[in-house]
Amino acid sequence: MLYPGPHRAPEGEAGRAEVLPAWDLADLYTGPESPEIAGDLAAAETGAKAFAERYGGRLAGLSGAALGAAIAEFERLEEALGRVVSYAQLLFSSDSSNPAYGRFYQTINERVTVIGSHLIFFGLELNRIEDPVLEPKLADPAAARFRPWLRDLRVFRPYQLSDELERLMHEKEVTGHTAWSRLFDETMAGIRVPIGAEELTMSAALNRLSDRDRAVREAAGRAIGEVFGRNIRLFSLIINTIMKDKEIADSWRHYPHPASYRNRANMVEDEVVEALVSAVRADYPRLAHRYYGLKAGWLGLERLQHWDRNAPLPEDDDRQVSWEEAERHVLDAYRAFSPELAEIGEHFFAAPWIDAALRPGKAGGAFAHPTVPSAHPYVLLNYHGRTRDVMTLAHELGHGVHQVLAGGQGYLLANTPLTLAETASVFGEMLTFRAMLEATEDARTRRIMLAAKVEDMLNTVVRQIAFYRFETLLHEERRTGELLAERIGEIWLSVQKESLGPVFEFSAEYRNFWAYVPHFVHTPFYVYAYAFGDCLVNALYAIYRDGHPGFQAKYLEMLRAGGAKRHRELLAPFGLDAADPRFWKRGLDVIAGFIDELDGMKAAGSA
Image (cartoon, rainbow, N blue to C red; front, side, top):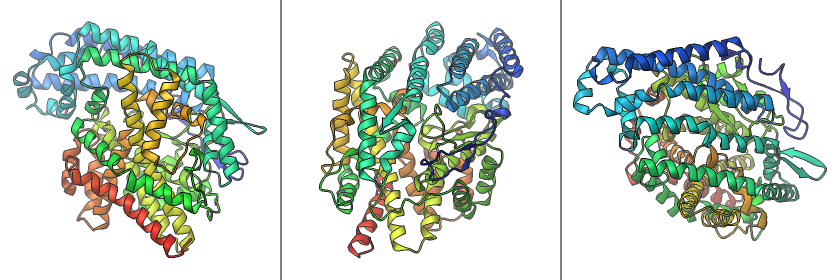
């Protein structure tokens, strides 16, 4: 066990002391000092050196069967390294403030980087094989199995550098982006936010921004902003360095704009992403501006402050949801849609593969880590006992179930592009929301739930596109020189005003709130994938509700495909095409329809 036993949610966090699960990482390794780690690394290093000696400079001359065997061996070596790295990442996420875990994480990253340098040649050499030479080899079943992986690998052919430069960039990663990401994580984990007589973790402080008491929200909002303000030079240095590091790499590789690499990694065309961004930005007025204008009226306020954005409605009794209730809600919703999905989901709770406990040093937010197909995914969240946390559980469990189903593709093909990686998570969230809403007859409760869902969707679509816009402006301006913290704050505020609308006024400390978004540091330009996934799921769910024949079977097949198919192939069985502007409008219309329903409930006196 990573931890000696279950953890209890502190009083005041989840409303009452409650046993919350902590994951068991023993399915990967029994501990950082496990001899299996040293053994696996040694075997991988020996295997990587032998692999390079056996295949370096010879790939073009291999038969199809021999090429297939070489890729399969490469896959086994990569999975062995991925297992160790996954364990180190999960251990570090469990307590980023533990120096021993930080040291272990860095040591593993350095060792794996060195071992991986022996394997860099493989993808580079494969990409140098011309199509007329490669294509006949793919007629052999052993090589044909990896055709989708080769297809995606060859997307990067135009941006490939020499073997020596590629190896240098690979080895310097541990002192570049990875090191700055670690500094960000450790800094965030160590921050304590003083609110009154309490010293709260950042996760607990951010949770206060959805408190029903406006004075509590304001105190938290100002305190968080002040803490970020005291650390803003460090956060600015981190983001400036990461942006410059990315600019250097992009310049050498000749990517046309800062988001180009991410789009290609997501196997989505630049124009599709721009169509999404344009559609959402054009709909800011009928979505966020309209909703928050309504919300100001419901709260009895002429203007909203940033700490009012996630405020519960006045009639919301803030009922706490126990972990057992949350588990039941999510699994019941999954089961009503597909018993197979629920059966896979049950393993996460029984194993245990979920860490929901609240404790200092633990990574904030939530994620599902796929680890490797020979093991299983793990889910992390911070469970505060709110309805939103139930939705977070449904979301991350969707990721986990997706990762289990895609695992059958093998290590190289299981990974789903980010644009489709949110499909199962957002769909699982929608299933859970709809099930809970339909089981509720009380009009007041339905209104509360519907408002919460609209806010989650605005956070997923409008807010993430605003984040993407912020990143785009930031990276473009960084190319002219380092940005002062004040300038970063100005860009942040301009984007927030555009997206959230005229009903908001922003106090001075809010200019520092960009610092709490880890995606800007860990995975630049990741954020639009959330909006892509939400709009995609809205369209998918509408088709499901309309009784599309064989929907469940097609849906499960889509999840099993992992990274073997691209979005056009995966959506075609449902009659959807992300390149069609009507696709995005259909997804945004769902959000607008919920807002219409809420406004109608208000007009009908349902409040």
